[in-house]
Length: 357
Image (tube, rainbow, N blue to C red; front, side):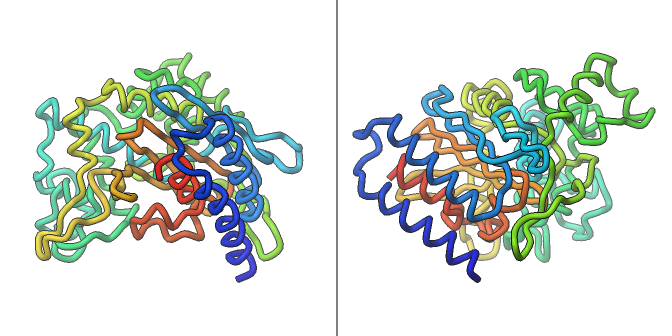
């Protein structure tokens, strides 16, 4: 309870300062970025995030790159923008891109039955679209229920429509946008013979080297943080990509430049699912959360392991992006982000108030 109150107190005090400054366009950007950086630093401490890396992209330009705290507490090794993290469910946005590429090529129809590709989804009428939009449970299409395990069923769909294993298809995106420090699965640090056979020697060497920059994982305790085991080292459509804010800024630029999929296809992914029974607009699109903030569309996703967490927040109409990666669950774990409201996060709330309101 004390931890929640402390976080709320910081959120309120700093957001009041931000809200009192007027329209962000009329203020000095450097001052805004400095204020937001102080907010991030304070909240990261209160949320017991040992190390946090952040970037802000505006108008296609990286305007802020920072590291806060430590990627390794015992070694006193500072977190930097190049620090690698397990980005958890941010991986889902890459899966969305891979599937939408298939839609463009005509190798996938979103309304195909998911059972054509996998037997892991029990509902007989569930489609690829339903799983991609987290609407496959119960009566498919009727309601939204976030479920990362079900989303992992899309691993086989990607492999089928891309014509190659999921992690090779993902590596294709990483290579295309020069995300040279990212790794499609922690198990590539010491791959099995079968896994190593998928990649050439330079790629394997690059991945092994990059894992050396992976932040040490921690979990929060009643009195602080404790060193933790790594989350699962493999990868699926749901989670497992290792990346940095520097590399994710490249991914963000590729999205905005429509390098990976066409603008119209991206807009389809950024369109809310609609309940087939109530007609209600649901909080998730096709691999992304979609909501309105003061009349402005916000596209986002969060990532959460107990040991790592992440937030990726885009405001397309403002050409504005925030990316946060941390080596504990603190970026996401307190805020019930699976409910579909990014403003439950004080990180997101302050960012939107300062740069969007």
